[in-house]
Length: 236
Image (cartoon, rainbow, N blue to C red):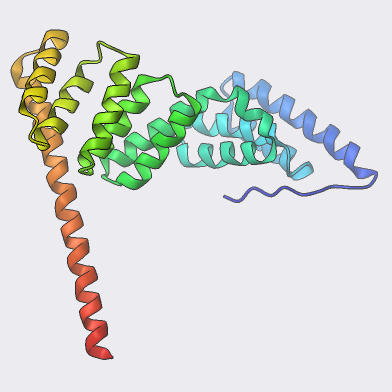
């Protein structure tokens, strides 16, 4: 979805602005009442009258977010920020949308895109432990253990009782051969989590499975690139 910022001049500008304001107010009224489809229709009308109306993009993003359309919501938020920089100052809640989409991408092992979303979430909420935990998890699965440890460190600084951050950092330490640090983190996780060892082992197994799957994908991509290069050399 493209956002279009159009310069409107002439006597119609005031009329267009008034019409856009009216539709945004009506859309917000419908939005807070849960009438998301009609709210979106109103924001569409506002943008038809005034294509560079940041608030219309922002509230349409809110409506799309409420409907579960995360991609559409993020498109609208980014248009809102580009057309009206003041909106960024009051949009800290947008971090949750980026983090949620990042977590979906993480499950699909689209790690570059997931990390990009977590970066955005952190830019809006740099004091939220969960954002660092999720980015750390993506980096851990990607094999970037130093960066993952750094994220888990920050997560723990913000939330000292985040048990899974200790567990995940322990896994990263283990991959680096730091057995003492890994053991310390695992014990701390057990102390905080009060769960059966089996549950923690299952979480570690899930992480290790994703790390291996990521390596396998990378290896397959590398083989395809190498094969393509060899074929190109043969043709030349």
